Every structure is written in structure tokens, then in C-alpha cells.
Image 1 (cartoon, rainbow, N blue to C red):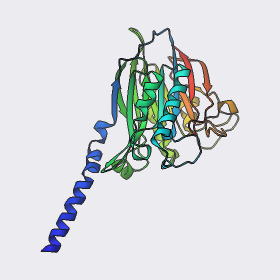
Image 2 (image 1 turned 45 degrees about the vertical axis):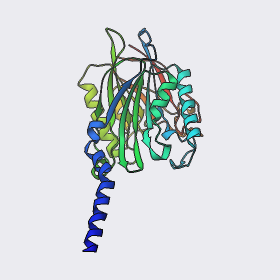
Image 3 (image 1 turned 180 degrees about the vertical axis):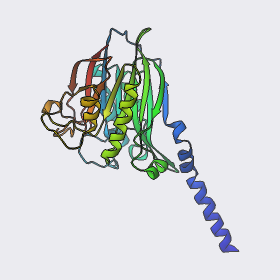
Image 4 (image 1 turned 120 degrees about the vertical axis):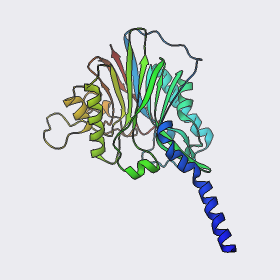
Length: 313
């Protein structure tokens, strides 16, 4: 009898401890995208140009390649780096920014809402959070993904799911999905921002995601900017044959204008920040938009470099 009571008690405690995890699994889709706004900042006046950027901030852990997220950094140091990222973004004077690998509530980064810290420091009143990974347990959480920061009003935002690398992983933890948002620039103009961070482990998953993006772009007439960490290089000029990269499929075959242009010059390399040797972070434009200028920004605040572009309607 005593053994039965002990076993029953253990099972009950285990079920109670795991309840937040199963609740997070059950509600993951409904909570995947969240939008917030602050009226503390003034909306700019749209003049026909838009400054956009993308920055994989590597969970705010810094620019050391291969560093662990569990680096036992103090809360004060992590917040200081996030403030520095926000300061850099403010200097770049962007209208819209996509963040990859940004924590919303993660035990390895002191449960800080990193997107909120950066958006407030950089002066973005509109913030969209999209959770790629969403795990909640007693005394432990792992919620991170992509974010869109905007100085213009967000009309709507929604999850754009991609085929998962692992169905089991998607159910238990999440997936490298994406988020899209329609942003109102003025009475006549709006733009669709599509934030992506494609799967690093599987070329097949990346290609399926590229096909999904291309299909969507080809079936609608909305000015669209797709930007983020694609984990994919462009096939070098003059090289033929072999498997096409995601950027080949979207830009060369799909006709989307891109920056960086070719990713073959050191000034266009985006990763790793300490010794850049390849371009995997991109900004792609639909046919309604034109690239006026672009830049890869030097910094050691992450292991990726920010990519920015000025585009014209």
C-alpha cells in the first residue's frame, strides 16, 4: 500500500512538473506570433524610400564564433550588449529591422525579452515576435526566434510555416518557421516584410522553404522584402551544374533582386564576424521594389554582421 502511494505521488508530481511543457506544445501555434506597440516614438514621414536591415544577434552572446549560449554571462553584461546592439541599430536609422536568434524568454540569457530591449533602445514603436522554439518547464524556458521591428504601423502579422527538419522536434520544441507582416507606410503604400531564418542542418528543408516563398511571391502582387539568415550562399559566377542554393532558386531563377549582390567580395561577407568568409544573410526584393544602396556593417556584437539596404518604391 505504501509503495502504491509513493508511486502515485511520484506520477502526480511528474505530471504537475510536465504540465507547462505539454501546455506550451498544445498552444504553440496560437502563441507563435505576437505583436506589441508603444506610442512613445513618432512615426516617420514616408518619402518613397525605405531603409531595412537584418541582423542575426546570436542570442546576444557576442561575436565569438562557436561560443555556447550557456556562457554564464552576468545579467548586466548581457543587457549591456543588447543596449549596444540597439545603439548600433539607432545609428543605422532603419525603418524596419529583422532580428534572428533573438530570445524572448530563455534561461540561458536570464529570461530577458531581447527584442523589447533592442526595440526600445533603437526607437521602434512596433514589435512582432515569432517563436521558432517554445519550451516551458518549471524553472526553465527556451523561447526564441525571429522578430520584426518597425517604425511604421503593423496592419497584420502571421506565421508562415515551413516543412520541418524533424516532425518530432517540431512537436516537442518548435521549428525554423517564419513570420510575415503587412506594414502601412502611408495612405497609398504598404509593404510586406517576411522574416526568415532557414534550417542550418538540412539543405532539403531550405529548398522546400525557398519553394514556398517563391510560390507565394509569384501568386501575389504585394511589394515584399524577404530578409534574414538563409544559411545559404549564392553559387559563384561562372560555376554551372550541381545543386542550386536557396539564393539561386529565389534570386537567379526567381527574379528577386538581392543584396549583397554576389557575396564574393570581402565587403559583402556576413559570417563569421571575426573573420568574414561567406555571405549567408540576405535581403531579397520583389519586382515592385528597387535597390538603391546596401551595406554590410562591421561589428563584433554578434557572430553575424548586419545587412542593410535602402529600397525605392
